[in-house]
Amino acid sequence: MAAGGAARPHDEGLRRPWGAITAFLLPALLVYAALTAYPAFRTLWNSFHEVLPRRETFIGLANYAELIQDEIFWKAVRNTFIWACASPLIEVAVATLLALALYAKVPGARFFRIAWFTPVLMSYIVVGILWAWIYNYDWGPINVALRAVGLGDWAQPWLGQPDTALPALIFVTSWMWVGFNMVVMLAALHSLPREVIEAAELDNCGWGQKLVFIILPMVRATLLNLVVLSFIGKMKIFDLVWITTKGNPLWSTETVSTYVYKRAFEWTTFDLGYPSTIAAVWFVIVLAAVLGLTHLFRLRDKLEY
Amino acid sequence: MDVLKKSILLLLLSGYTLFAAGPFVWAAMMSLRTTTEIHYDHFGFPDPIHWEKYPEAWFNSNYAIYFTNSTQVVLAAVIIVTLIGAMAAHCLARYRFKLNRLVYFVLFSTIIFPPQITIISLFQILVQYGLYNSKLGLTLVYVAIQLPLTVYILESFFARIPSDLFDAARMDGYSDWQIFWKVSLPIAVPAVATTVILNFILLWNEFLFAVVLITDEVNRTLPLGIQRFIGDTQEDIGMIATGLMIAIIPVIVVYAFFSEKLIQGMTAGAVK
Image (cartoon, rainbow over the protein chains, first blue to last red):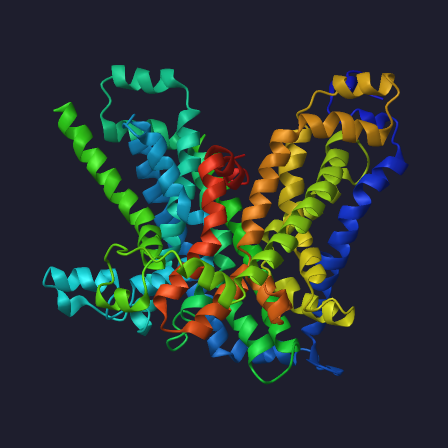
């Protein structure tokens, strides 16, 4: 028993009351085992089977072989990755600029902060319906505004054509999440030591220099954290697509989530094995991507300091 | 010069505010106008104000049912997940034992799981146990999906409570359960409030699990109800806007009173 153990947070454990430990952990672990761990393993099991309502047949790697050739799946993977890579950049960049603006002691900062945060409190369902209206060809405010300033030729059915649908949806998620990222950035900025920034001002550092060399490096951890969070969130995206385009037109907005849903519950194949295979493969891809991203960020951290 | 700079900045910020809040203002205006009026001018002010559309949406299209279902499922799930999450978090923060960090890591790592990895099997499992298409089933699933984040936030808070407090309580003859219930939890009220708010908002808006696990009209939660509502009313934009506002209003009201707490709750996962 180490001396000084009493100062550590876990020192109750010196007695190791297994009864209490079990009692405290049991409900959470039961829920976890029954509704997270078991389903995850069962999905893996499903992926090697053809799973029909009353019959399961082992088919080995056939589902995986089919998946490799499944063009819609790869299209969905591509769309999801474009989304998950574009969003963090847009959101975090715009949020940082807005946070800096509020940090510069603008009157009404509190009001702005509260107003900008609102979109993230709404469900994707509500947001999706609203933006479907905003993008409406005939009377949506975007097209109306374009026609009003004489750019009527630019008016288009934003969600209705393959090359604008995905960017339009990415724009919606950015609109929704910028406020959230801004609030986190602002909190990080406010926690910076005032003296460092004041010292930079004394050294006659310009605004841009101050930002690039002093402020950004100091809020790096928060920035990267937000990037990873935004990335993970977009890899899961389902609701917004489902309520607006359902993956149309021509699979241009199909994400892996919507494709799994379609294959499992909409297509009349009734087979749950193949969608489970998609889920299993996607799980590995997401895990690898997130681990890779955090590893990359950590590596660069080490190089810089 | 400085005044000029500030004014330009302020103008830009106001512009962004219009962009961020505009859609809601627009929806709120449409919710008080009839579809005929809206088709005449999509951006007009409500004149006269059609308040009667709210009771109409509420009574004519099962909004009362959706609202009640959402309230029941979300409240039950939040209470359960807070309780069992707090118990687990307290245990992981307070007791030192082999596997402690392993249990923590296993629970925590679930946060990055894409929902697809469990959703198909959850559908099978709930069908098997007669919980498919029931509010109880959905509630249990909601508890499971919010458990990792709850444990994560609470554990980091509990770990910061000085252990002297627990030693003193033990001297006073408190049992393990009493220490959790009478020492840990009361101190952790701010953190608990944070997780409650966060879980409430996330589950109130949840759609994917609901759409897979619920089919009957009588069990639909609000997001499902709205989806159904647009299906039924199609071109009746005015009515859909009213429906949207009914779904938004509780969140807006809570936000009006507890904006700081809500922002804190929502961003709790993002700030280390």
